[in-house]
Image (tube, rainbow, N blue to C red):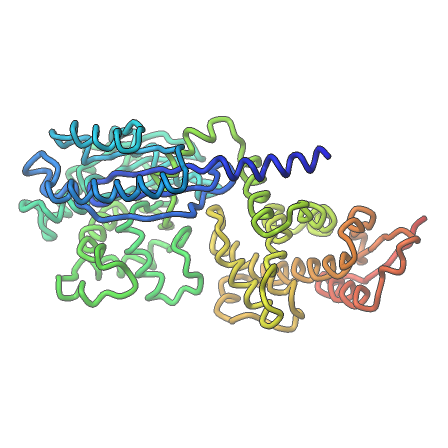
Length: 502
């Protein structure tokens, strides 16, 4: 009864905990709506409008008139969406444009009256910290420099072992640069170097990783991803070694208007800013000499909510909440994935290539065929798993998970498209096959009921794989179960052994 009550409470939490966050920037306004930020950091509503509030801000010191009217129209639409959806939990943040413009009072009052919510205008340092906290939401471990390039400013934050240690905000937004008559592509590098020179902490040491945040840098890396035929079409956690991206950056920075019109794969609203973003990125890379450049879709908005939601929440709790959320969404109301995980965990305790978090996720995601047709089930599940809405998965982890769920539905002798396999080493491929075979065996074993997982034991001893079952349940060991147990044993290079106990 207590378990049922917990499940009912969990379902009610998801129904009553929707939250919206609106980000008013110099170039665009975006609204995200989350079903429950405690359980999932992936929004179910994500929409932006390019308003250019900060156009010519350096010259006029005022909000752009057309941009302001357009922004209010967009915000009224967002308000209607929230009213219809009965969402009253709203956060509104604003960045450089409302910090610097001298005529913001009436505009801010209109927004606050519209949403009955205070507008939180962030300082430059707060913006940098929020961006860094947002990156921490999207990665398991952050160590390096977080760089958030917006329309009005560039925020930089040094993160050492998940702790923000230094931060700054610089007037290097792409909209600001595009409309500044004094700064052109030919002298932008010199201008950037001058601003960086005043930030002494930037040049004191090298950074292992550079985390890029912001729509223009996402567009830049998305272009790189497609031009290099990367099989995982997810920009978050897309990672490139420095030596493999510099020639690409130098090439983009030289593009003129005519060349920019021919750019494919990305939004046309972003293309005018690509050369500016490339020049700034090149200067950052030259200064800090990172080994890897990584893209993050989680930034200032996620960081603002994370600071509020996760002050005293451990990584394990955040992860467990995400597991429960996905399990509920996939129809696993009874949390059966925990039974599968507990049953399979003993044979993967020493596996360095498929850790506990991934095994837990594989047990959840292996149920993802609910509602799918009988044909090409393995391919459908592979693609759904590959694109599962979780932030803290590297592309390598996504491929391993997708492979394990693929092999849960088909024989090990079959393979998905070969381009995915080349991103893993042999040990990672073997481990994914082993987990897939284990899930396939476990699901066959539980065709009658998952209660058997609590009574059966699966473990390794020496060169053998043991399945220990109560004598009363020996009828469960059908030909299909025996066949798949032997298949799992082969994949683990072990001899199959079945033991019966009273």
